[in-house]
Amino acid sequence: MKVLKFGGTSMANADSIRQVGTIIKSDPASRFVVVSAPGKREKADTKVTDLLYACFEKKQKTGACDDALAVVEKRFADIVSDLKIKLDLRGEFDAIRNAINSGASRDYAGSRGEYLSALVCAAFLGLEFIDAALIIKFSSSGKFEAELTNETAAKRLAASKGAVIPGFYGAMPDGSIKTFSRGGSDVTGSIIARAAGVSVYENWTDVDGFMTCDPRIVPDAALIDMLTYKELRELSHMGANILHSDSIFPVRKSDIPIHIRNTFNPGAKGTLIVPTKKYLAGAFFRNTRTVTGIAGRKDFIAIHMEKSMMNSEVGFARKVLSVLEEHNVSIEHMPSGIDTLSVIVDGTAVSDETLASTVSHMGTVCEPDNIEVVRDIALVAVVGHGMNRKKGTAAKVFSALYRAGVNIRMIDQGSSELNIIVGVENKDYETAIKALYEELKEM
Ligand code: ASP
Image (cartoon, rainbow, N blue to C red; front, side):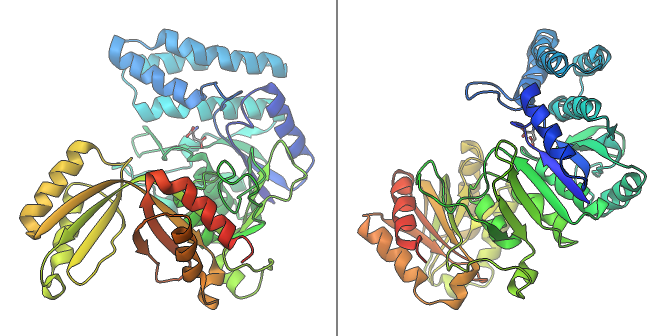
């Protein structure tokens, strides 16, 4: 038995939905289908989810979302008529329009793309529709309730012979809609896979799988045929944008592999993401390489602090962390020296005001001799289980960057020896990735 999740490009128009139908029907193990909202039909197009957020903003600005919602209604009407299915969505759109115009939340508006997409897909495939609001549970403060969801969903799914479930959202105890972060339909697929107890979670997207590095920077990057949950987490957190990095948490509880596949190239092997412990115990085999993949992201910010005798000041790091917590700033890395400590934060997740108030508050609470903020830092992660068994990966990383003229601003290696992370300047990011790929591709 399988759960299949189809992303936005797979749901974008009638042709792609027909292709989805062929994939589902060709495999008798297909049981539950999770769908995204229709995504882009071509490069310049707008995703339905973004159109729906625009509806919410339109209502905030002008008091009504009607003309913005008409664009979404047209997108769905075209799909329904092209698919030649009997489905009248006018009542649904009236309800959505009324809800947004009466003050429904941004999450509610954003979630309607998945809701409608699942209605269309269920009608097209002749399968039952199960609303995610009934089985995916959040607390009243908006925290995802993993165990309650698992129990509720398991019961509901056991009573179904096959169903389509919208991705991306669930509901809080009062019934109001709450979404995961962007790309969250991947997480829904994983939740459904765990609750249904399937043997594999197939995640169908528009690329063949994970690549050893970003093919926009290195066109000859190779496909990774197998990744462990841990490697996936490192690579997707660091920018390998194929699967939501939180997707492993639900399936990890039951050791269900995730298989990344391409809707538009179903013959391709894809990338199989397998439980780390089982892989390390030899239950899965791949041609072992030292380095599995390289990924990275730009726009981090480093806050460097220096203070004489910092190493003997008990509680210094705690003070730093408490200031960050008070300002709700999450940290990516915290490299330290004897008298220095730096925190690296995601520059796309903190506003200038928050950063300024956090740094000034740190100055008062921690009393460093010097505090400096460095922007435009890119982080590059070299990831692979092979690294802790083999000497010389770090040496290769640093010498490749040296030869490419890249100045390393920070170094971090997780205790699991699964990754080496280097911080470089944004302007050196592409050069760093290319140099590392060349150096490590044979390893
Ligand atoms: N439609 C949502 C987004 O665009 C969720 C998803 O596709 O996974 O982020």
